[in-house]
Length: 164
Image 1 (tube, rainbow, N blue to C red):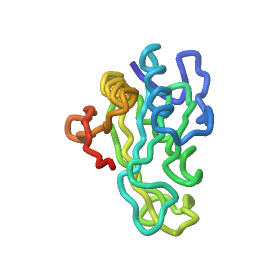
Image 2 (cartoon, rainbow, N blue to C red):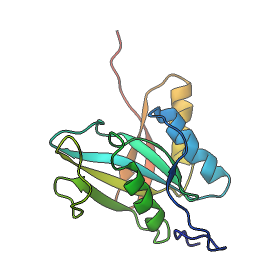
Image 3 (cartoon, helix red, strand yellow):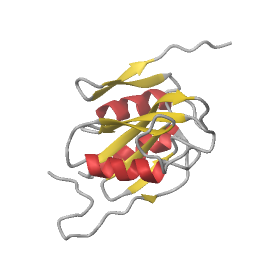
């Protein structure tokens, strides 16, 4: 199945923010809803910061095949560009990394903080790891996602946190 910027009826899917949130549960649910209805989705994760950045490592957003996205990986300056890249890569089926700001191939996307970020774009192939994380969080147990770039896969990892 191909996911170009145009659907089978030649309607262009312009990236559009679905709603404002940086809540990780809401972002993962947004992806699960797409996958459970048979639609494609890409998980975008902030994996490197060069200099300053508005969001911490691990910040995420989800882009669905209809162009709608939620979440933040910057202060709002690269989300639409990242969504466009996610829509383009859905058709290829190959995950990718993109850089914005310092060290980026695009001179016209500059981060206000003067730094740079690297994002991993992962085409979601299964809702299972996301559901596993959501289930653990619902039970008030820590969890995270581990991405394997070679296998282009995600797994749910129970994480350790200190309490008290």
